[in-house]
Length: 52
Image (tube, rainbow, N blue to C red; front, side, top):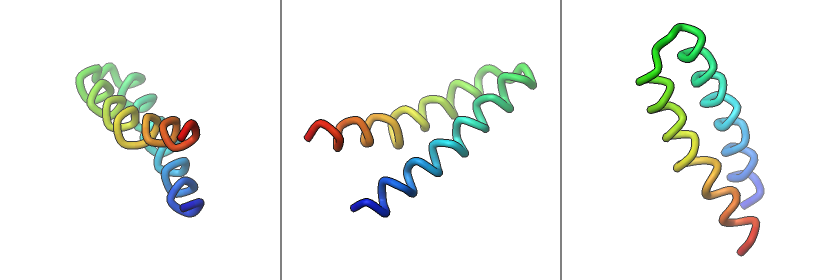
């Protein structure tokens, strides 16, 4: 279970980098999609598991 959390944290950095990249290139729609993926697949499950 700890390995899965480490993988989620690494993926979180990747998706956060993608959000910053798209924001700097003024592609706000793709940045929004990347942020939603980051939020729903990585951040919310990490917070939910922490308080379980």
